[in-house]
Image 1: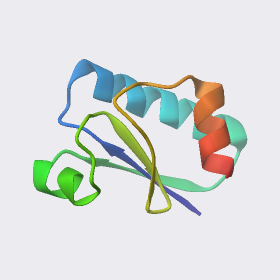
Image 2: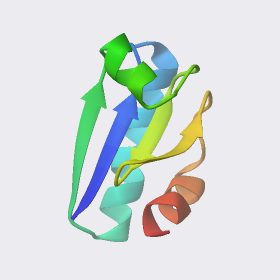
Image 3: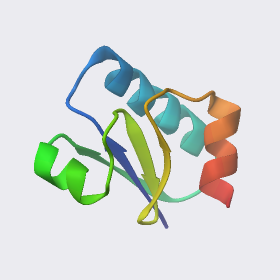
Image 4: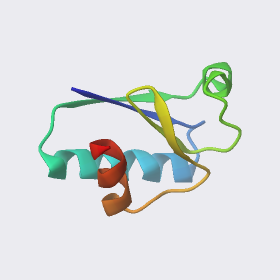
Length: 78
């Protein structure tokens, strides 16, 4: 099961990231769990200074922008 975390404070970009990640994970047909992390201390613990960010299985994959669904699929499959 893939563990996906969306790091962000709830801004529009963060909400868009959550939508795109959900869409990408569903289209891959994999088992996954998405957690939204909004606590700034937890976000900073990942070394993230710009949100939104995507964490896949404990590894920060991207910060500061919302990638395309195809880009997210590649990040999830790595």
